[in-house]
Amino acid sequence: MRRTILALSALAMTVPLALAVPVLAPLAAKDRITDAQALAVVLADTRRDPDRARDRDRHPAATLAFFRIKPGMTVVDYDPSGGWYTRVLVPYLGEKGRYIGLNPDVRGASAGMQRSQGGLHDAFPALIAGWSIAPGAPIEAWNSDGLPASLNGKADRVLIMRYVHNLWQADLLRRELATIRALLKDDGLLGIEQHRAKGKSPVSYTDGSMGYMREADVIALIEACGFELVGKSEINANRRDPANHARGVWMLPPNLSGVTDPAEKARLIEIGESDRMTLLFKKRR
Image 1 (cartoon, rainbow, N blue to C red):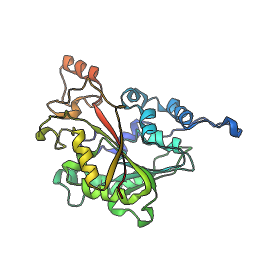
Image 2: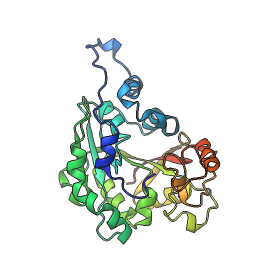
Image 3: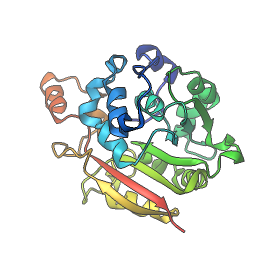
């Protein structure tokens, strides 16, 4: 749920990162598999078994199709956290693709963000670049304050998965979106998945501290930073989620933060992961 950055090195030891897909014999042109079939092979690989329980709530095939991601693309994954989507994207993009993990520039951020990001900021590039997921796209990683100018205009897609609330709360959103806008090709797209608050939720619940934001607010903020909404989807909607949890989205699975009562835990598990908006933007001229 990403209230703070996860300890990536610790998590990497608990979830296998060596992911491969079956080697397919050369195919005649008429027998080439579709992008959807290629993604299905990746998702079905047995080495994804530790990740598979979350497929029900995250809908990776439908989400990546909505974001129009195809093999061979250059995809920037903003704050890949424990690598759940990394383990899908790298083999799907393939050896002709390019996977870039991007960590925020925390200079000038809140004290809380600097505390949670401090050590990770220093370790991030080497840590992510050291992940082994083969065969697939080469993995590289950058902090946004260290991006080389040569990457500008190279990204086909940038994904921000359940992280806009952190950027908004830390007052980093405008600066990071400017960086993302520069990274994207002219026809590149920005895909966003974000925990969704109810439309009439108060400011105190939608300021990022609870993980939830109103969809209209997210669209307005992204568009104000040089983007234009081109589509939205209910792929990751969960109408069972009342989005009013006392300690925010982290009370829901998989965190179940601070939940000790068995009946309450069972109720939250039945709800599942959060109700989420899924949005797609292009660069505004």
